[in-house]
Figure 1 (tube, each protein chain N blue to C red):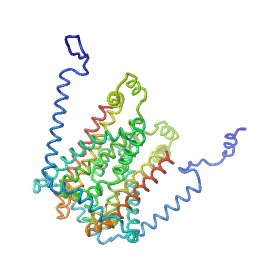
Figure 2 (cartoon, rainbow over the protein chains, first blue to last red):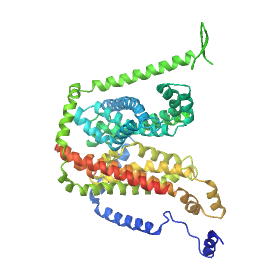
Figure 3 (cartoon, each protein chain N blue to C red):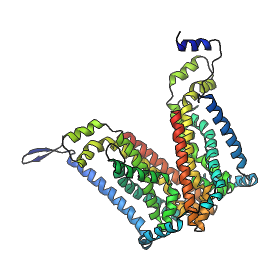
Length: 273
Length: 271
C-alpha cells in the first residue's frame, strides 16, 4: 500500500472536517490566543466617553440630514476657489511627478540600469514611499510657507514613489526578445528605449498615470488641513463652524469628482490594454 | 500606409498628416493647461520665502538634530494607541465590509437593480473620502479621542476591503458552488461551504494589506485630534520642539517599515 492509501484507510469511518487555514496546530493556537489576549487588552485600554458619544448622536444625525439638503450657494466663492486650487495642484503635480518618475523608473529596473544607478533610484523610491503625504506637507509648509506650492511639491514627491515603483516592476517584467530585436538593428541606447522598451510599458504607464491623478485629487483634498492649499482648508473651516450643510456640499463635490475620475480611468484603461 | 512623396520616392511615415495635426494640438492643449496651472500656483506663492527655503531647511535640520531620545518614554502609550486604532479599526471595517461585499458581488447579490447599486455607492463614498476628513467629522460628532480615530479608520476601510473582496467573490470557481448546491444545501450552506473557503485566502490577504495601510494612516490621525502618536506630533510642532518632532518622525518611519514587513511576511505565507 502507498502512503496515501494508508492515510485514506485511517480516515475511513471518521467524520470529515474542514481543513484549517493554518495547517500547523501550535502556530494556529499561538496566533489565535495571542490575538485574543491582544484584543482584550486593546479594547480595555480604549477610553470611550459614552455620555459624550450619546450627546453627539444628535449632531451626527444633523450631519446625515445635511446630505439631503447640501448648501452649495452661501459659501460658493470659497468652495469654488478651493476646488479650483485642488484641481490646479492635482494637474500640475501629476504632470511633474510623472515626468520625473519615468527616468527614475528606468533607473530602478534591474534589467536596464547598472547596479549603482539602480541602488540610487530604489533609494529615492523607498524614501518617497515611506513618508506619508501629510507629513511631507507639514515639513514643506514649514520650509516654503503656506500655499499651494507646498501641496504641489508634496504630491509630486509622492507620485514619484508610487509611479516609479510600479513602472519599474513592469519594465523588469517586459519581454526580452523584443528589446533585443531592436538592439540587434544597431540602435543607440535612446532608440533602444524608445522602440524596444517604451511600446511595451506604455499601456501600463497610461493606466497608472490616470490612477495616480485620481489619488492625487483625493490627497489634495486634505492638504489644506495643514495649510498646503486646496479645498481642505474650506472643509476644515466648515466643520469648525458646525456648518454641516456646506461641509456636505464639499464632500458631495469630492465624491462626485472622484467617481467621474474613476469612470474615466476605467474607460481609458480598458481602451489602452 | 501613410507615405510622404519626395523627389527620391515615397518615404514611410508613422501617421497621416491629419493624425499628426490632431496629436500636435492635443499636446499644445496639454501644455497650455499645465502652464495655466503653474501660473495659478506661482501667483499664490510668496517667492521671497521660496528663495529663502534652503536656509530655513538647514535651520530646521540644525534644530531637529540630534533627536531628543529621552522623549521616547512619553511615546510608548501613544504608540500603543496608534496600534489599537489601526487594528480595531481594521477589524470593525472587515465586519462591516463582508456583508457589503456579498451584496455588491454580481453572483451573490440578492437583487442586481436595487441592492447592488446601494452597496456600490457605500463602497465609492467611503473610499473617496480620506480618513483624516472622516476623523474631522467624527471629532465634531463624538468628541476627540482614540474612539473617533477607530471609527474613522473603520469607515474609511469599508470601501477598500469591500471592493477587493467583492472582486474576489466574483472570480470564484462556480463548479464548486454548483457541487455544493447539488447536494441539496440551503443558500446559507452554499455560502459557508462553497463560497467562503474559496475567498478565505483573499480575505486574509486583504485584511493584512489594509492593516498595513491603516498603521500609516493612524499615525497622522492625531493631527486633527483623533488620538495616537499624531497628537504628540501636533503638540511638538505647535511648540516648535524640533528635536521631539524628529524623534516622532523616526518612530513613525520605524512603525511603517515594521508593519510593511509583517504584512509582506503574512501575505507571503498565505499566497
